[in-house]
Amino acid sequence: MSPVRELLESVDSDEQAKIVTIRQRNLDNLVSEDCIWRARQNLRNGLASEAVALLREALEWNRDHIGARVLLGDILASRGDHSAASEEFRAALAGNSELPLIQTRLKVLAAMGQQEYAAPQQEE
Image (cartoon, rainbow, N blue to C red):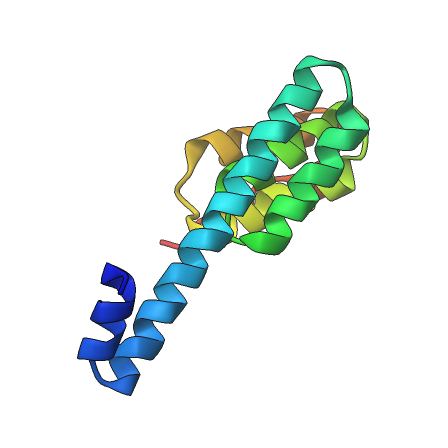
């Protein structure tokens, strides 16, 4: 019997459910990371459209992946799709509003005359 199966049989059903959930999250994260890695490879090879598709797939597996959102936002901004880029940067900020990297990207969009994409103001 596998060590995982032994562990599952040794705990109650609530703990089993937690273990299964953790395993699924780990699998989702692995698939997401693989998509992001392949997206970066596609970018290096000049295949931005394929990279965008892979980043969107990564976000289907892990919608909170900040790196995928920032990279997707960067690609969209470089293509002139500032609205979609801003949406990705804001979604990344939703997880952590203190990320200066993303705040900077939103400021750059604003400086380009896209005031509606400015970073949200911090409440004090």
